[in-house]
Length: 330
Image 1 (cartoon, helix red, strand yellow):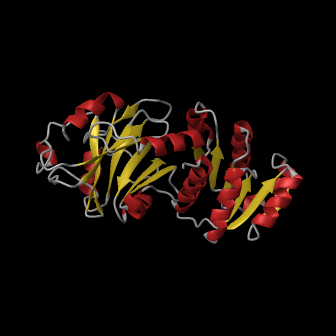
Image 2 (cartoon, rainbow, N blue to C red; image 1 turned 45 degrees about the horizontal axis):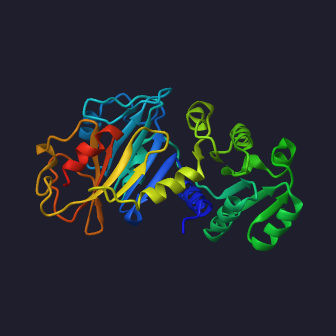
């Protein structure tokens, strides 16, 4: 049984634990992790091509798998001559330790997330507060309806429940919103969630997450400064999609607000790709090998990497290339 609310709460906690990244997704319990971030001008690889960055940082455990230029909706599958530019949204695949390496090169300042304010006592608000309290975060939850606030106070003894209208700036100021490390808005109104996150940003809150129902808001988030938008229907659809097998694909995940898919394959002994080095394959230019899990260990496959039977391979590709990619694993 899939609970969109539980998926959203889990996604929020994962995002808070991966501070600095706007999107995150784990494969095989973290053997590989997909991380998305927007490149600031201080990112050390801005202005460099993928090939140049790989030569400078050759020992690192991550690889770019998709890029979206600022202000566009066009998804680029990066090649060696693709240049990283300021404000690019870049999705990376990382193996163990790669997330810390990527953060160090991102130009972002490491900040501990400890104090969190949640707006909205919905199912998502409750589940998020409950999970974060278990993880030893300091949680304040603001809910306007008195009966629900009282119920939450009984069910969440480790959280501070505030009964008040979170759209009221004075109430948020009284609750020291400027001292919060993260602000999460999960009311039933997308516009309220977006506006309250913008308010939190203006008060100096470092991390903001808004729940939205309308997917059109995703593009808007790029330009208005909200760190992450989540959509519970998309989370549920991706979760269901992962278990719908189609042809050689054992799992599929859509990249948020990008025209690209993550495909997972298990390599068969007689696959066209078995015992071949990646550099020797005539792989589509609209697809890229993101990672390989072998015997539970995540690896970033480069040109000389040899694919073996039993490997679980993650490929990022544009939708038009799915059947072409699938043929390599048949």
